[in-house]
Length: 108
Image 1: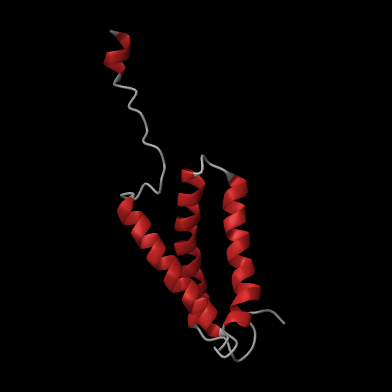
Image 2: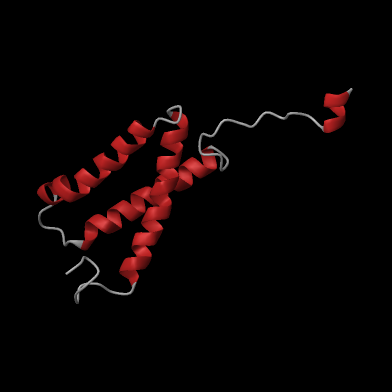
């Protein structure tokens, strides 16, 4: 049995997962770009988020239903992604590309 099987999964569950993945990818891209393209730090962020929602969430909020963790992660990832996209004007921390000039500038 997988996490997508069973009566507890509605048609919105895969859509929520896809939306969360896209939003969190924007956050991870910003972290990767701002840390000098450090893959270990991006991996540490991913691992930290996975461990928090797999282990700590249920200990901190034992009375909440199971689906609340996914909703909280979707909302927080989306809010962070929107703020980062606005603050970086869509560049997500990527350094600007230097203009090499036109061909006529280089041949002169």
